[in-house]
Image 1 (cartoon, chains in turn blue, orange):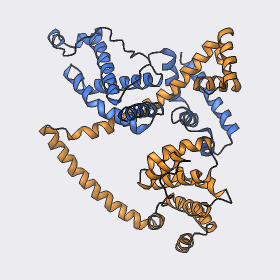
Image 2 (tube, chains in turn yellow, green; image 1 turned 120 degrees about the vertical axis):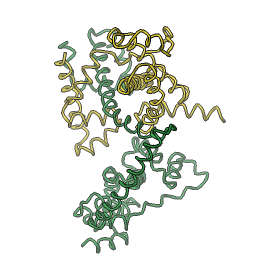
Image 3 (spheres, one colour; image 1 turned 180 degrees about the vertical axis):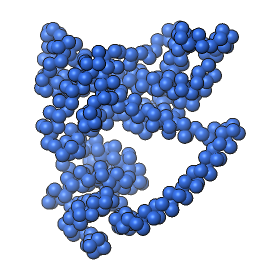
Image 4 (cartoon, chains in turn brown, cyan; image 1 turned 30 degrees about the vertical axis):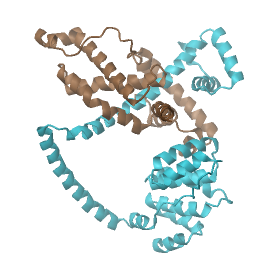
Length: 192
Length: 245
């Protein structure tokens, strides 16, 4: 029985993440941020660094789960994974030339993070120029299109519901979605 | 790059269906042939995939600062004395704020008769009896148990899922509407309740009309509220109408 429950629970959390269930995402965020903040503060970073690094890591974890590149066995394995990605990202910052100039050599010697070479975790899933262009374009897209596309692709609402919400029939909703998509793609190309 | 750009609605929808995994077996195999043979098609598909990921990622990214504030608020009761002092102060501020809000909402409630009437007349639909061993629609009744326990979120999750395949089902629409209304999402409840009222033979029609009236009342749309309450035969509806006129 216990095994069955575990499997079920595991699927539930993966499903919730893939559905973008906001309560689940919030719980993962709140449960993990303090640890990452403590790590970065202890290692020459500020709260702003912590927030940026954590959010980058959070998005990477979410995307890796979505694309089945990381299949968590439980919620605690997500937590560990998120922590490792954040740590890797912070190591990258510390190693970067720009950052080294701002801290002294003695500080460098006291890093508490151990550098584990190549732990095989893909934290660069969102580092893609085209993707960044699309994201920027989406941010700048008109409100109506933004809302429509968000309902489809983020909130995963059904066609019927969206059509009702917009007071349109489903054929015009589909057409509107297509036109918003075209607009977004054009905008993303111009940004290049 | 220009080729990548020109894409018809039909082609877009086909690619989208492929990426969602919702193509039929037959369509899937012809799609895969095209992927292999048509030059440039694979990169078109890849590009649409990137665009879809981009929309989703930016949508989530836009929410992260809200998550962050929430996370920070939750961790203020950490154990060192400095934060304790600070959180005590915060508590005092919170208490003061609560008092101000309470005073304000007292004014608001007395000032807004629609809100007051709603509070007086609204009570959630008690739900359907859930008997043990009712196996033909296990999930539905499982959700009904959640609903009755006030766990509207879980109930909604199941019922909304079921609605995807039975969009016109009056029972589902009625209880999704009821659960939304009970969790103070009256605006979202409207479309579901409306669907029920369109079905003349539904056993839920009168109740749906009544709750629809209440949902409009809560949204401060008195005209619509009256319109729907008038159509309902429920006794409370008549009662409430008298108060509204």
